[in-house]
Structures are given as C-alpha cells and as structure tokens.
Amino acid sequence: MIARRSITSGDIGTDEGRAEYVERAEFGKEILNRFAALLRAVMRPFAQRAGVSLDRLCRDARDP
Amino acid sequence: MESGTEDVLVADLFDPDDLVSQWVFALTATVEDLSIAESLFKNALDNDAAALLTGYHYRQLIARLYEAERVVLAIDQHQDVRDFVSEQADAQPAIEFLRDAYLPLHTSKVRETFGYTRHRTVHHSQVGSCELRDSLAQAGDQRARILVDHDRQTLHYEW
View 1: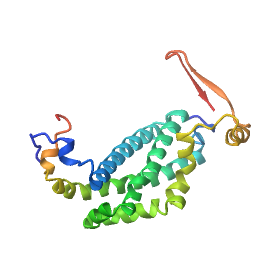
View 2: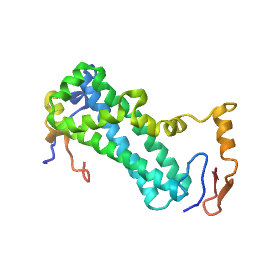
View 3: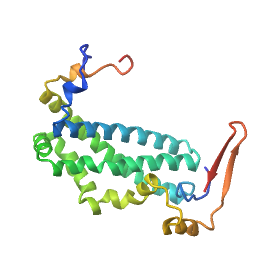
View 4: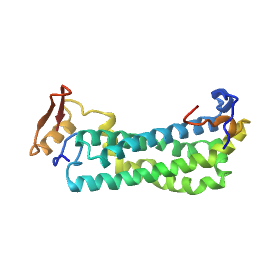
C-alpha cells in the first residue's frame, strides 16, 4: 500500500485513513443492505399490483 | 423460483404516470448502483489497490449513497408512495433505519458523513475558489509524484 495522503483521494494510504474509510464504508454497506431489504419487501406486492407475477420476471442469470 | 418464459415489458410493470411505479423503479436503480459501487470499492480495498484507485471507487460509492436520499424523501413527499409502503409490514424495519439515516434531509447522518466527499466527487473545485486554494494550502506538506508505468504507458498524478 502506498503510505501517503492525497488531496483527491483522502488518507487511504495511512492506517488512520484506511480505518476511517472502512468505518464509513461499513455505514454505507448497512445502508445498502437496508435498501436491498426494502426492495425485497416491496417487489412482490408491487408486481402483484401491476398484475405481473414474479415468476414471469425472473430468469436464470447464467442463461437469461 | 421457477423461471418464466413469457417476456414482461417495462410498460407491463411500470406505469409512467404512476408514482408508486416511479418510486419502485428508483429504488431498484439505487440498489443496483449501490451494489456495484460497493463491490468495486471493497475489491480495491481488500486487494490493497493504489490509493488513487481505491479513493476513486470510494467517491463513486459515496455519491450514490448520498443521491439515494431521494428514494427515502419520496416516501414523505408522495401520499401514494407512503400508502403503498405502509401496507408492507416487512418493509417497516428498513424504512425506519433509512429515515433515521437520511432525514431530516439537510442535517441527516448521511449528509453529515458523506456530504463533503459527495460534493468533491460531483464537482471539481472551481479555479479561483477559496475551496481549491485551501485544499492546496492544507496539503502543502504532502508529497507530489507522478506514477509512471512504462509497460502500460500510463501516468497517474497522485496528489
């Protein structure tokens, strides 16, 4: 790792900077998890509301 | 879940004039963008990528986290959306967490934590601004160097 600071990139090259990045990224990851949970909770009722079944929407990602 | 065979069109699922459709579409775009941005950042961090690269992915993630406030705000702004989500019991814990993170808008935890970085991601400092002058002044004791990769014939300006 490059042990330096950067005007544009912040302090990712220092231990303190890396810890700060990780802490903030963990907050961001938790936000992402909650958005994903919200989407999972509303997707089926939303599709039903539109008259579309989830089965019709879903495809095998390896062979869409 | 079994795969379906009959294609569904965007118009079948999202009514352009329906606020709930618009909100669910915005939510899916938010989750997709955040997932990709977080994955790229984590990959760079875990592999000890150059600070320039890790910092770039970090800023992209932060910008998407910040912009996601619109999805949360829409629940308060639009009665149709609020009515729809209030009927979904499974959604309430996530909504409660997200409201705590994103509201009130101008003093939110997300803006407090990521606002400056988001600003520096979306906007380069203007030449002649105090912001740019202060950034240069504050970083005056830091090394300035150009990373030269002869094999790839690239230069990276690391400051």
